[in-house]
Length: 318
Figure (cartoon, rainbow, N blue to C red):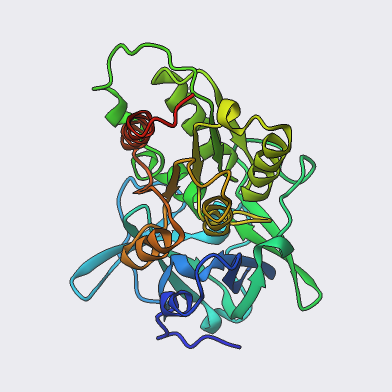
């Protein structure tokens, strides 16, 4: 179904049952190519507005406009992707107004195709031939109506323009010297850039046994392996998960963990750019122990400290 420019796309996400491993993807066009974004990240879609140029701004910033008393910076998505900027039918151009990492940003696209409900299992993680560096802007690929649609890493696109809006290590400064902690921590994060930053942040905080996974399915399969071996208590003390990931999202992963009698004691921290009131309610209903909004790594370290102390207090530590 097509999406009208005035639609509040995030409302669609609210209708979805929690933990079903499904999402709504908005399909749009840039330079004749098809891309996708999780509807949960979209605040609204509007026709192109006149923009005010911003002096000395990043090359990918097209300008800014004001709406309802708020100033929105607009990113030229074609420019950010290194593609042709002009289309034959500019009247189809739209602004996708997103909200994640607690920041609203506009993205100039060349047309909106429609919304598709898909299962995360249909979304393929890009292999090394497609996604061969930490700077890749693709997090997944899905076949929609016979064509390949690339799911873009909007966090990485914004972080390249404004690093402070991306993963923030500045709040690590107060941590100081800490003893090494060998507690095994598993985390699922599909963005290569963010995965490296999370890993570096946790190891900097003294956690010496951090195991990164590319998506929720990989992490779940590892938990299943530990369960079969009878080593869950020794191999996992905490799970950290993003929400949107190919193959299996963080909400479904949380639901599976908290529904398993042998795993439900494992603290689960949801660390996502999508945390808002609605998402927080979903996470709580699934049994998440803590939920944090990116990008503050220091807050994540504090949350891990807290759940591990709670675990010790409950007498379930190993």
